[in-house]
Length: 360
Picture: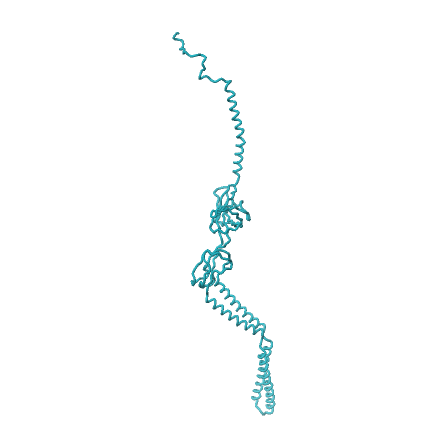
């Protein structure tokens, strides 16, 4: 071995070389199979991807579902009186259920009782006057006036005869002119008195005039109006339930003075409804008369509610848009809903949750 020859290890030349590249004839079939699998997998996933994209686009155009909270409300009625009085008796307690027309409180007012007695006395007097005007004079009164007329008529005849005699004696110069004039004046006075008695007799026969009857009728109407006023004030001494409901609160105690228009009893109506505020962009989901499902957390119950009315809120409830251009003011509406089934346990103040779709 010379120095220029490379060293030769004692290794077999036929042994495989570790770093040698694999033969092409062995790897080509393996890579083709892998590519085919990937292509089939992509083809299988492509419809799913297209479906997901289509669903996402469809979902983006669907209205969002939002949850709104309503509140159970009811009408509150305050019972008061028109006149100062004292509490005589309270017949109910807070929490009692009452029916329309039920007596709740009895008051006492001596002034009203006195006024009613005065009005009744005035009415009785007016009715008596009206009866007299309708009936006219009594028979004995007419006969008396007739007798008085006849007596004065006889005196008138005597006065005329006396005057004729005096006139003849004056012509003969037996009596003075003064005496003749006195007898003439007496005859004229007797004639006037006779005429007055005759007119009184005729009036008694005719009865009352239409004007007298009308005046008597008017007096009766005035007295009757006073009685009606007294009865109306007396009715204010008893407080009746104007609606079916529940006694919310009673004010005052027995013998305490009650002022005019000051509440004595407060009632909550048995009719319940739900008040819900919605924006204009949520309005399309509601129509008057439509039905909504509402969940009542206090009762853990889902109930169907009917839209009774929809009214616009005031300007103070208007919601302004936040966009500077292309926006508009969004108004707010108040929706009143009533339960379609009777719910005895539904109380004022309970919350009701509704789900609505918000338009895009």
